[in-house]
Amino acid sequence: MSKNLTIVDTTLRDGEQTAGVVFANKEKVRIAKLLDEVGVGQIEAGIPVMGGDEKESITAIVKLGLKASIMAWNRAVISDIQTSIDCGVDAVAISISTSDIHIKHKLQTTREDVLQRMVKATEYAKKQGMYISVNAEDASRTDMDFLIEFATEAKNAGANRIRYCDTVGILEPFITYERIKVLIERVGIDVEMHTHNDFGMATANALAGVKAGATHVGVTINGLGERAGNAALEEVVMALKHLVKEDLYFKTEKFRELSEYVALASGRELPVSKAIVGTNMFAHESGIHADGVHKNPLTYEVFSPEEVGLQRQMVIGKHSGSAAILAKFREYGRELTEKEANDLLDKVRSLAVDLKRSLFDKELIYLYEDYLEGRH
Image (cartoon, rainbow, N blue to C red; front, side, top):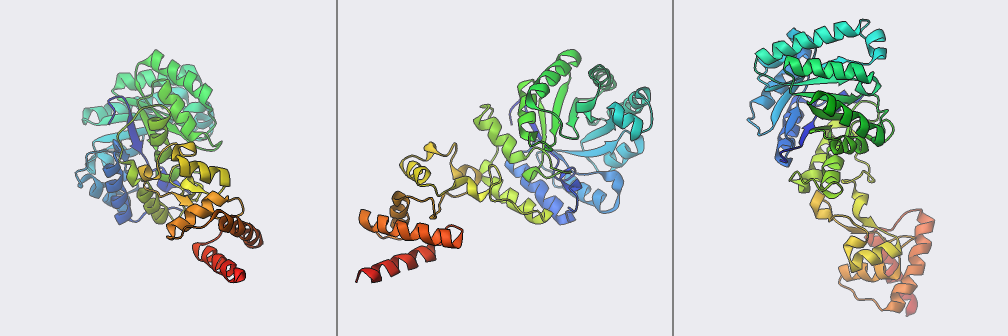
């Protein structure tokens, strides 16, 4: 792990809050193991105060003895925190709303009361020897002066970091950078980015926060989470590695396996066009693209498919060129002439238009066999 940056995975807490998603206890344990294997520094394992299966699965995860820190989520309530401690976790997230709209309409209280609740809960957790993340829920809609006061009080009460929650996903990267920079400069506390994807900018906002000095990034596998979801672990880690040049030394070759397992466990299909781990990431059909990739994969691929546990696919269809036909038949152990490839290409394009899709290998072979028969 980088000394300066920790990935905090909340698939088992925020990810399971996705409408309609429930993980079985065994699945939660398996996901925790997989997260630990790939290199996640801290796993937010759930909400112990829910009791029953939730407490049972969190306790089971703690007993695995993983390298990752195991965190539990809590309201700013002492009994919540004690329930988390009883599960054996080494870290607690203490969450309370900080925006005026939440304070007035959800909590129906005052800013002063929010501060008092948070301080009381934080001081209690500190006395119990916990690592503490104080979560400012709806931070992105919170008055900046109050947020600075809140973070300062949290720090003084013993919090290790502030979780800056873009709860409704209304940030954009330029504003994110400015706000996180100011928060860190004014308070001098570690900040975790917790970004939602309502406007499709969760990963971008997470990176902007890192650029501004955030030391932690909250993520979920496949971007699971409430409404449009959270920043996706696989996107954040690969973007940090290839765009920010911050390599966290994750076992990224396991990303596809991890994404497939979580998709299965959550009952949420993994889209073929999903960034980083979707099968279309390394599927090439366009003649120009396929030809470029044959000559040098870096012409149209930023990293190799093997780096995330995928394989390159050459798709034959309407947009294919003769170079792709030649290459595909080499895979079958057959060397076509240029004329054969061009003749076959016309038939490929015609059939692809009729079928409204690319062709399967068998269909391509049948076309070739029909073509050979037609020549005799």
